Figure 1 (spheres, rainbow, N blue to C red):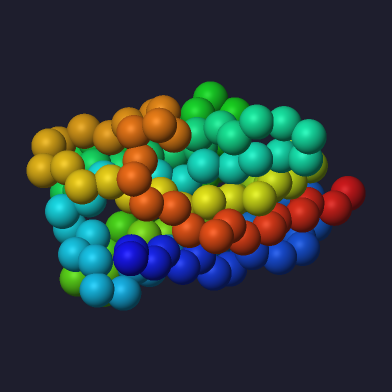
Figure 2 (cartoon, rainbow, N blue to C red; figure 1 turned 90 degrees about the vertical axis):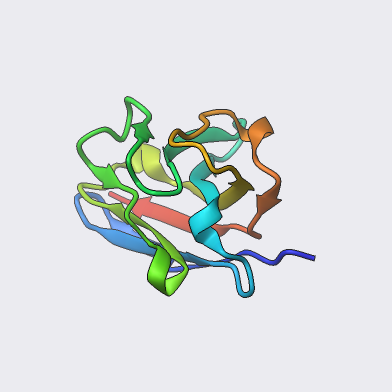
Length: 126
């Protein structure tokens, strides 16, 4: 059973920054397309950014473009989500997702991903 573990959530004031980490012990993440999704209170799950296995291709939701980045360190088997200039609307449960793919692109849809973390909460306060 693949286990994906996120860390780094918490409470932050609007305008602040947070960085998440995502690890999958035993899973060679350099063969996986990866993404972060989030689910705001009372809403459905939405894609935030995704990244191809070699980082050649990324996609960002309009709402986070210019504020979030999705670096990955395949040597450390770790995916990150760097969130800057946080807004109240960024309050959500954030999930790391992975799916095996050797192509040079990533997927926006949650239905393309096979493996999910348990989620980590971000609360942005005024």
